[in-house]
Image 1: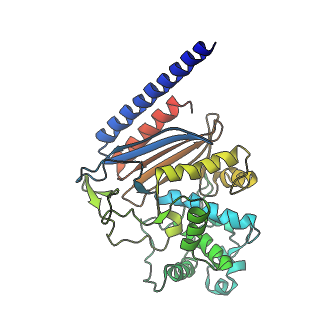
Image 2 (image 1 turned 45 degrees about the vertical axis):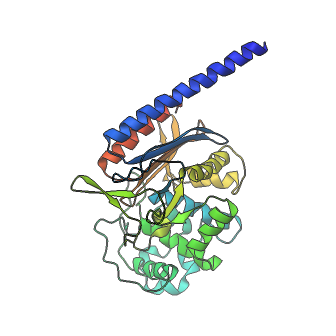
Image 3 (image 1 turned 120 degrees about the vertical axis):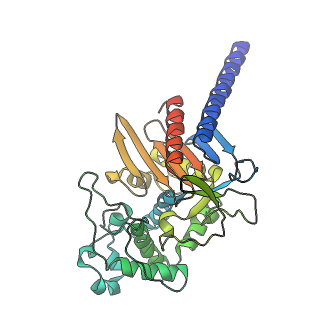
Length: 361
């Protein structure tokens, strides 16, 4: 009996190794064809890592090989992390999902557009507040605000609330806006008397030990990933000391992290969706992912072809990340890259499709 068990275990292990090798070969071939300098991916369940790989190199101009210690800017996948922080303070009774913005900032109400007078924390996190998008295309001209990052966000928030609203998409029922997450963060900063940066440090670095950092990965003082923008169809490596800003919407998209640490955050979500309490309660995870149709709190909430998915992508123009959580099968798929253009997006979609097919999603 023991010998048969040993043979079965050996067969299973060998199958998994071959299975993993097949995924690696496919992902690396897509990476090369799509001209992606570095592509890392992971497949996880709530308690285990099914597969994790780092492929390629830090930059098209360097020979530094990819490693699992590499950091990636995750763009709008930051939104789920900001919503996660806010959820902790909702659980603690500091805020409610239904708290109105102007209950926290009553002194701003008279100078703001009346359309926004009843917007809530939930409206902002689910993109139902009709705030201008601030995604880099045809944005209103933003004044040069002075002060600390927190002070600049406050000035930006006041400015945003004077602008005309956008129309809600009648099909998807929301209007995606990076500025929504600045306004939601301003509510949290007011009641905690802490900056978003301090709150990220407390929740993700002190409490959860996830080694989160801000802005682009440091590639001038250390060997790490370079983001790549696309100019005239050609990838251009971008040094981390390049002067750029997200127009005061950092809580919507300005975190960098290692894949190995990010997947731990995703596993917390998988555990919560399975009904287990951890840093947040299972009830809170249920609301974050499923509480609002189409776009819930930091996650697209998708039901199609008998599947339930929480998904999001992220980019600030130099990195591209994509995450899918299969809520029915309890699996999550993450792909991190250090480039952004149509080729990168298509390549990542192909790798995601392959991984999900092979792992049964």
